Image (cartoon, rainbow, N blue to C red):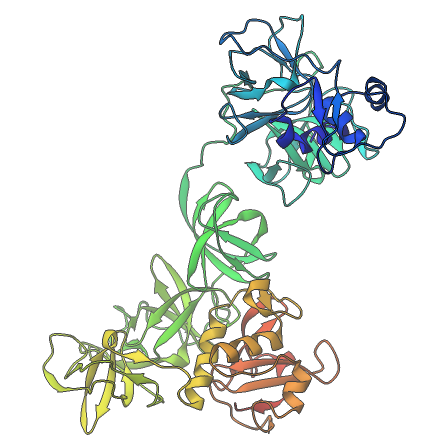
Length: 608
């Protein structure tokens, strides 16, 4: 972290903490004369001379004389008055032993005032933290000066440029302060945009800086020169009372739509130190409902959290050229009709497009408060904001006709649902309604519709409702159930990035044929891993069906001449027009009829 010599010293701190006697060294496996001379800070020539060595060869178990090594502190007293100086970069630990946590690393050459000793350990205070250091790496000094802030040691690395005096810079973004010069190193603190930091030295593309009482490394490209540079006698060091992490800004309510400008992490809190919730792909539209400093609270694909404002671009959620606007709020202002969800679950999106971000969902039978209708989309109220739902999944019913629970008619696989034990069939979709029948233990159900809480069944002429809590859905029992199961698997990973040649979520995402392989194997269908061309031309998934074929949910769709000539892309249909696939911006949805790119490249379909 400081210089080549200091880095070498840090690399042997594990042994340095446990160094036994300072006067001798017993050779261990892996030791060399050079490493021993570095560990004990004795020139190689001097070490050879003290031990009458004419070559660099040493043997395991050999005892080497270390006369002239750093002075060792006496450990018989508990109180120490004289100052000490570190002879290497030295770990400050929470207790007197190497099993204790490292609080920080003290640079070589720092003056310390021991408070007390315990065996080979001394208690000291450095940079506001009190802990224990090993005595073998302290030497007596005549100075009585108080410990000072870490100085900038000289570096032997060719890429290091040390300023002649400590200068100051300002952060241009929210910037991670890391423990070492690597994006994989631990983040010590996140420095807000516009904060002033002290430059200790510049090392290639990294700067060693001090912010508050914390020192570490940041990418130099995100720093700009401060307006004034303090003189060497007046370093721009914040007072010890200044907190390393600024107080959290006040959270405010907002209602603003944005488009992401990069693949963007969603976190549980307003800061980079919080756990990751999900990742939003580049170009997705999100709706922000809260703002905390430079972070916005958004919802994407049913998951909510905070994203950095630096990767958002403002947009609008108003529909373009609305047609046939409703008379105000259909939940109250429209006196003739109500709008009811006519599908088990319907996504609410930030804008009138299937590629827009999902900001929530509504369930079967739910009455919607519609603001206006445009181009096949309803703009509706959801919570304290608005969103968009596809009008084709919403039915208009006479005002007041939704007092009783409504249900969704449709195609349900009779081999997909069963009850593990007898369950009541009720006249209406509520648990207090009259019991009109009972299901059989382990019996398969003939499901003909559903509400948010109940399935509508027709059992041997008895029609009624069974609570979903008593019903188990089995995937893979029939071909149709399997096809629906693959959709369910793929939907779990909507928003994950496109990863070339990946067929597993452990890699962080999928490519287009990889998600097909994963979804079918997870749904119980064992297929080999191959590419799009082989899936299309081979016997996999049955015969080829031309593009005039009308697909259903679970059918596979194939495209040609995308990134290469011939069959080169594929996805899973979730209805007759919309498909889910791993595209350039990650796993998501597209519509064939409304997007010329996909329509012009469509080859055909297969029905697994």
